[in-house]
Amino acid sequence: MDPAKAVEMVDENTICVAAILGSTLNGEFEDVKTLNDLLAEKNKETGWDTPIHVDAASGGFIAPFLYPELEWDFRLPLVKSINVSGHKYGLVYAGIGWVIWRNKEDLPDELIFHINYLGADQPTFTLNFSKGSSQVIAQYYQLIRLGLEGYRHVMENCMENMRVLKEGLEKTGRIEIVSKDVGVPLVAFSLKDNSSHDEFEIADLLRRYGWIVPAYTMPADAQHVTVLRVVIREDFSRTLAERLVNDIQKVLHDLDMLPSKMKAKMEMAGEDADRTLFGSKKTEMETQREVTTLWKKFVMERKNKSSGVC
Image (tube, rainbow, N blue to C red; front, side):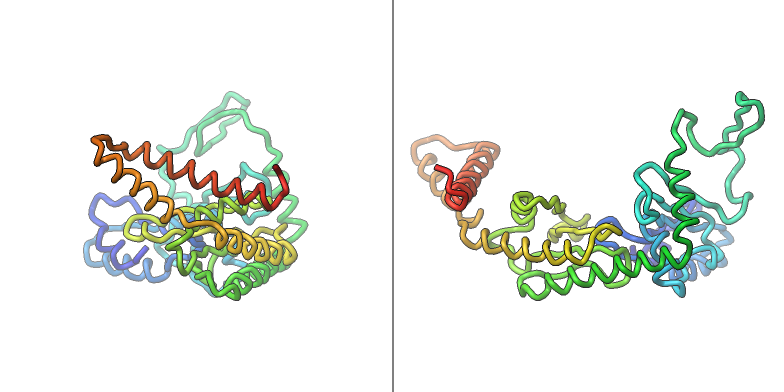
């Protein structure tokens, strides 16, 4: 998010501006400090009181330990609420997270449900349903067991393994790193040349080596960029990082031995031209299915030859 453009869009109907501390796409921290300063100026000019919410689902357990000097939290006066997920870098299994408000007054009382069927008044800002407390207990245990120093050590180790993976990919000479050094410990990367083979093919072939690495296109205005993303968690060791680099190199070599999808499409286009001469033309869906079938045939033939299957 561009803070200046975001503030330009604020009007009298804006309830808050949400900044993301740790983008899902590339791990980047948005500039909450600049957003706060620009929004404070606009509030002063207009008389509005537009606040900021920080979505720190991933970065909330990273920034305090790796970048303590970074101002993104309640040190900024317009930040009124922050959410963070314990099941990401809080080191707890899925199902735990919080939203925290600066003051009690910042959470309107009409948004809070009051229940008393358990014998006393219990205010809750959620929908009521039965749910176990195991994640809460696990998070409480981790906070006490690790503490500030423990979490700092874990996050520093994640960043170090991220650098190992990043440097290994850069040494191939064929990969461009899209993610930033400051942010969530992840590596988002693209092929420097995807004219013959693309990132989706890499993701597909990596499954043969036991890796599930997502490939996806970026959002609007950057949808021409396709990236692969590897998130570095506590259990992603240096050994795994080095193994992944080796497997990606193997996949790149395998792809070099295969004809490109573009060539397959050109062959199909030639067949379509022949059919047009005789008065028949395939639909786009039929063409895509044949391209996919032809591609799978190439891949399976290559795989069978390498494995010795008749």
